[in-house]
Length: 237
Image (tube, rainbow, N blue to C red):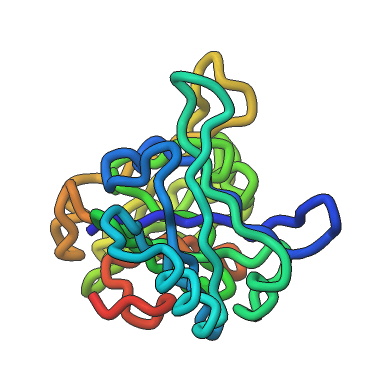
């Protein structure tokens, strides 16, 4: 399952803009100068590659009738990831606003997007180790202590206040309830970044495999790692 999470930004005229710069675009056929059809949907949109078109004028007419536009993939300079940019009135038809997050599901020739739910902050492809500035930005700074609770297809990590003074209590509680006591580590040489390792045993109890995609949501000091996308955006898997 190819999934990405991106933000809606603003263009120079302060109107909603979707600007996608991604190294995976060529792998799904979105090469520089490729023609792409953008069709708005409620709280989302589709981007379809138009490699073979019998009649450009007919494609343009059909696209306009559906409220969409045609765009070309561009690149700023050689050896730089392709860029796909859509903004203006057609973006306003989606209902998406500045700073909204959108989940992207992509395959060859097609990208589907839908507004992500509140609280979704990250999509991770390596569940055993999560790294980056986003952890610290979410309040999980190096040195933080968490209790991880595995469930069916999910793991809930809760911040523990004043943890260093409560070590015996937390260890006893974790052992008695088959929970996992974790600590956020610092990444050497990368200022502001943090790292969180999820034990293999915890992943296994939750039914999560090493190559599963996880959806990370944050609420009230709880970081939830969810395997299934049911209830998150438009996905049904």
